[in-house]
Length: 278
Ligand code: AMP
Ligand code: ZN
Ligand code: FE
Ligand code: FE
Image (cartoon, rainbow, N blue to C red):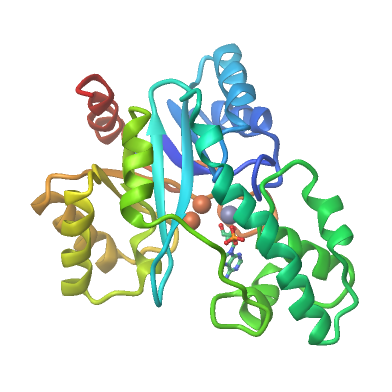
């Protein structure tokens, strides 16, 4: 498959390592037709990305990734917008505040586990970004407590591990409505992280569709062939468009590079067509 668009990329506005402008440059230089910036709970990277996209002649899509309440797995909802949705950032106040509230609680747990790490150590790394566990992982790596991100998560930070703290999240329906209210297209991100059996997933996606879900992220580095086949069939049955992307967070985070995963031109056109129908 010739990949035309990578619709899932993080920047320094959340937990990515590259600035929005650098992401767009890289996406343009590998010849993509489109890239979507989908930072966690913020649109603050979008203006820089869009202006870089204009300079480089790359279709740059304003996006977001919102965490929703779900157990025992993890649910993320992506939203894509025709233009940067002014006003949405204000409505994200509560989820941004939840991130600020959670991170000192994680630090406390790490301290209790014997690590010498302060909120300042992490704040310096995060800067203005929406703070997330990867910033904490980075501090642990810098201090020599863990070798890499994978170890930081699998030993301490991942859901169910000793330094995990849940943050207040929106319900799935509220996340969908928020995206829809601003004219966006809501898409279920990386369905494998829901950790559901096929029949449970189908039921859940049906519910989400009733709440306004329009698409499903099918092409994703960690999805197996069998998973892609299952998700394609569910999306087909429920008339959801297919998206895909890498969830790129920067060089050195994993072996995956921008554009390694995504959708072809035909799927991109189908997705973009939805903007015109809204
Ligand atoms: P947070 O926004 O604080 O919930 O952190 C979520 C982010 O942590 C994800 O978007 C990934 O960037 C990263 N992450 C989650 N699980 C892992 C993992 N097992 N290994 C490495 N990074 C992870
Ligand atoms: Zn992330
Ligand atoms: Fe995600
Ligand atoms: Fe992501």
